[in-house]
Amino acid sequence: MRTLTIATLAISLLAVVIAGVGLAKWSEAESAIAARQLSPAASASANERIGTSALGPSKQTDVPTVARDPSIMPPQITRTEPTTVEINTTVKELTAEIADGATYDFWTFDGTVPGPLHRVMEGDTVRLTITNPSSSKTPHNIDLHVVNGPGGGAAVTNVAPGETKTFTFTALNEGAYAHHCAFAPPYAHIAQGMYGGIVVEPRGGLPKVDREFYVMQGDWYTAGAFGDKGHQGFSGAKALAEQPEYFTLNGHVAALTSLFPLRANVGETVRVFFGVGGPNIGSNFHVIGEVFDRVYSGASNTFTANEETWYVPPGSVSTFELRLDEPGQYLLVDHALWRVAKGALGVLMVEGAWNPSVYLRPPPPVGASH
Ligand SMILES: [Cu+2]
Image 1 (cartoon, rainbow, N blue to C red):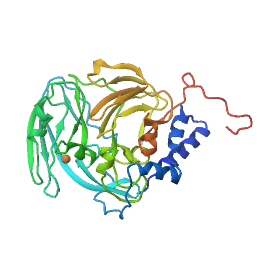
Image 2 (cartoon, rainbow, N blue to C red):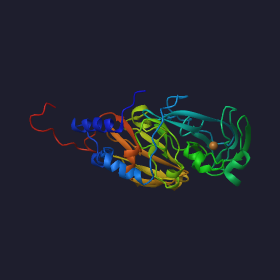
Image 3 (cartoon, rainbow, N blue to C red):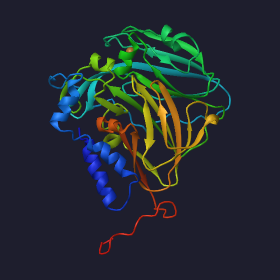
């Protein structure tokens, strides 16, 4: 599978800057990405705290990756009357690459990390059916943070391999919410990738936007070090110490850079549902070179206007809206920027005409050909 490394992306983006297309606040990302080039001695020193295991060869994969395309979205709600919505979700335990040349045993909802984004309206009755195929190795369930009731659904959805269960809830509260597997120990199931989002829109739906995206950050505790090739097992010691080797935006280190970069056009309004599966580490979500026009962690009418960086804790989804004013490449980062060196990076590619009234570029050097 062809994937650019983060360092390669950094170099290509730097070339874009030199070419004069421009990338605001580049130095922030550049310095964080440069951390990727730790000296062997520095890497060894960092690894000594928790330890790393030598890896066996990569396993045969069931799918190349579990990375989720952030542009695959359920349609926006336009109706005004509540209805009954059926949600069917199937557990899939899959071996796939978490980074180039490094395989991992994922547990997922419906084969991707995060699982699909579900979308209902305030007041809807939701009938959710979860299936755990007989090929699975372990039981699972689903806890949806939008549910009002013990366990958020987990208590009545325990499914052993080969079982299917259904429960019904009413979506009382507008907002965007996380869901996850809570089968004991829940932190282990989340650490394997079992999380996703559900949006409860107000009656009549959220304001129309030109594009929507769905992104969830996760932290990963692998036996080997970041970048090692081979099969990465799960390290409980690193998880307990909250020392992840990898961060991902959508289930693969390169998911939102080379696999599925976000794409939009100048003048468009964009809504990003950004969540954190965790299990341990929240995200300080920031888009380098843009200001969020509206951010809301709860109901849409509680929005904060004009925000730069917004903390999204583990087990939560917040909504970010922005209007795109200039073309270029905008990096999505966790602004605890060392995490970029471990994979907490995406890119939004924006095409269209330059608007010098918003961002005036310096003239090219004398003698330059352009
Ligand atoms: Cu599970």
